[in-house]
Image (cartoon, rainbow, N blue to C red; front, top):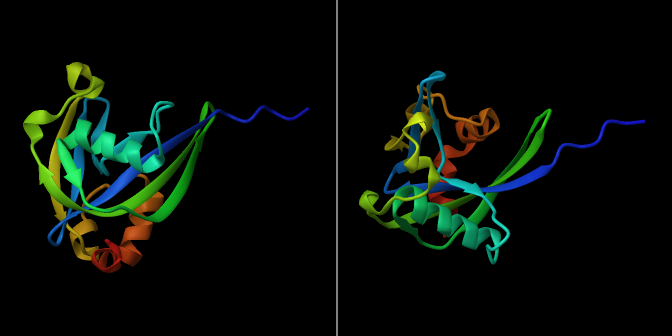
Length: 152
């Protein structure tokens, strides 16, 4: 008899461009070294679509509004208790007001810091940071220069 598959969690993430920079979240947690990640999160049952989920997440995490979205990358990550399927969309920042940030991650100081950071959207700009997931970092090493042309 085979082991049951772990539950699937769908996530959406933004490759959010602000001029020549990629807007990222710099995570500082007490249990691990600093790392960077893209804004986004879980697709909730009440979200009308993955794109609507991403717009909700951008509002919660950054107080941000983005222009049109274009799906450019997807990857899966498996752990013993969860399979996470993340879909990445490239888009341009229209506006951002960090004072509007809200959500459970900001309510519990034990979860650490979620600092907004801008990193040049180039291979050399991204190389020195610990961007997760590793599959995204590998994708961007090859395609960072292409993102501005892919953004609708």
